Image (cartoon, rainbow, N blue to C red; front, side, top):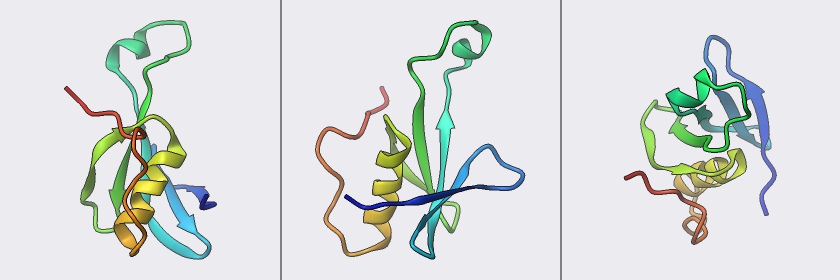
Length: 90
């Protein structure tokens, strides 16, 4: 398991992801617009990942760590993402 540091990205709702001192990219929560109107806690929140260049990584992820793992896999020679961690959008 890889450990990541998250720092609030100024001027955005996302967080910068660091592996040690190396900036990998940014992760952000993607919330369904209907859940913003309800008073209960949203259960369908997913995360998306963006490279340093601003190019989004395809797929939606169930947790912030899964999105960071996808960033790590894209920026290094590490093997691909684990099976079952990606939520495919319909």
